[in-house]
Length: 333
Image: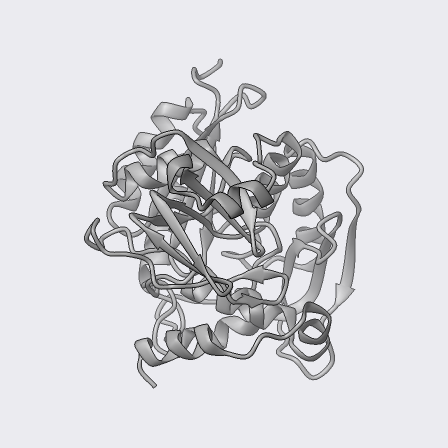
C-alpha cells in the first residue's frame, strides 16, 4: 500500500463511535498514528491543497498531511508504543475557505501545524507565515467535527458558522499546551533521555509548576503487561487531560543510528542542549539560536512569557520536529 492508498483508506473507513473505538483500540497507537501523518510539509508548494478530511478517528480527528521525515521506514508502527503523545497537541488547520459535504471537510489555501500558545488565530498566523502563505482576512477560530480550524470568515459555510462557537485565547489551554510540550521535550526531557521513574516524576512535577498548573496530580504507573519494556520512564498528560502519568520501565533507550528515528532529531537536540547549557537568553536571542540550529529540519514557534527569567525550549518529535521557544522579551541578569 502506497501513501495515497493509505490516506484514501483512512478517509473512507467506516465511522466508529468514540466509546467503541476507545474500547478496542490502544490510545497510544492512535496518538502515534496521528502524529505520524499530521502536519502539512512546510516545503510543499503553497498552492498544494490539504487532502479531504473530516471522518473522525476516535475523539480527535486526523489532520491529513504529508508524512514527516522524523519517523523513518517502519517508524509509525514502532512509534505506536514509543512516541505516543498526550491529548493536547491536536493539529490546527489554517485555511482561506472550507467546504463541508456529507460530513467531509475540504480545505482550500490551507496550512496545518501544532498550536502552542492557546490563541489559535495567532498560532495560525505563524503557521501560515512559516509555510509562505498570506495572512488570513478576518480569521475566525472554531472547533468542528472534533478538529480545530482557523478560516477566513467569508470562507466558512453559513451553516457551519451558525452551528459553532468561535474559540478565543484560553490561558488554561495555553498552560496545558506548555505542559504537554515540556513532557515531550527531547532537549532535557524524558523523551530524549532515559529517566528513571523518580527522575521523570521530578521532571513532571517541575513542568507542572512551570506551566502554572499547581495542584495537577502526577502519579507513577507500571507499564502494561505484555508490552515493550526497558529502563526508561515516560511522562505524559493522562487521557483525562487533568493529570500526568509517569510510566515506569516503559521503553529501551533510543540511540543514534536507530532505523526508527531520523538522525536529524539527535543532531538538533544535541546541538541545542550544548548551545543553551548555562546560558540565559531573551526570547529573540533564543529564537535566533534555535532557527540556526534547526535549519530546515523542522518548525520553530515562539511564545512570549514574561514570567520566565530566561528562554526555554521544548523540542517535540512526531510527524516532524516542532521546537517551541518560550521566554521574556529581554534577558534578565
